Amino acid sequence: MRKVQILVALLFVLIVVVELKNESLAYPPFVAKARKFGAKDCTFCHVDPSGGQSWNARGQWLIKEKERRNADAVDPEWLVNYKANKSKEKQ
Image (cartoon, rainbow, N blue to C red; front, side, top):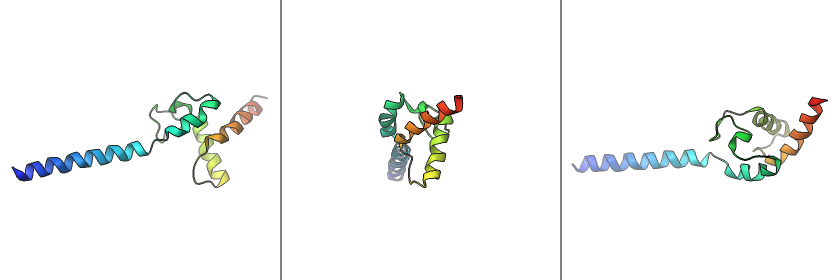
């Protein structure tokens, strides 16, 4: 009986750790920083409403911009340039 209790406790801890790990991958501050560019939620840059690695055109642009700038992380402030590029594409 004691082994079963330990196994259940370990399973619970494992589930909590996995859930916290997934939560830490999200970047809610990005939405706050991107609000001035029109963001309401994660779908501003992601296909999936919960974020993750499925990016729409804006998100793909940010990833390319990160590589171009040789940056460690994406900066939502770069979106000011994305809008400028979109208007040039329309011309």
